[in-house]
Length: 167
Image (tube, rainbow, N blue to C red):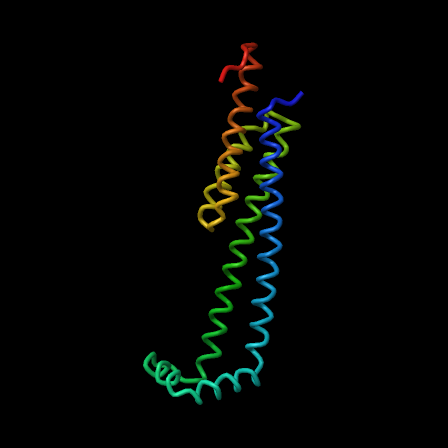
């Protein structure tokens, strides 16, 4: 029979998994949109139209000249920013996968409480990584799940010594 702490950890882990999967899907979709914009921006006709539009606006031309750029440099600058956006999406996707793994390991503690230590470590790693990329919900859920993984670990240790668990 599962302890209450193990059941709560299982529920928190499922919530982390669901949110991580949703975030991962959104990141992939956003990455595809950025990739599509990059493909459009690489089209020579589009680049020529952008250059002509910039040349027609005196204010924009002056701003570009102040930075030492010409109207032909604008599409290249757009390509750089799109590339950086795609790189950012890849990094966030990897970080979402780490949170997903933490949720999977935490869910596994319900079936095998001896893995509570590993779940606690994964939840702490997930909380730190979630803080780094700004996912506050996953961070809070991971911290709470780490606390419950520690409780499961303590319950297992107390049960193996034959002493009743005390909070």
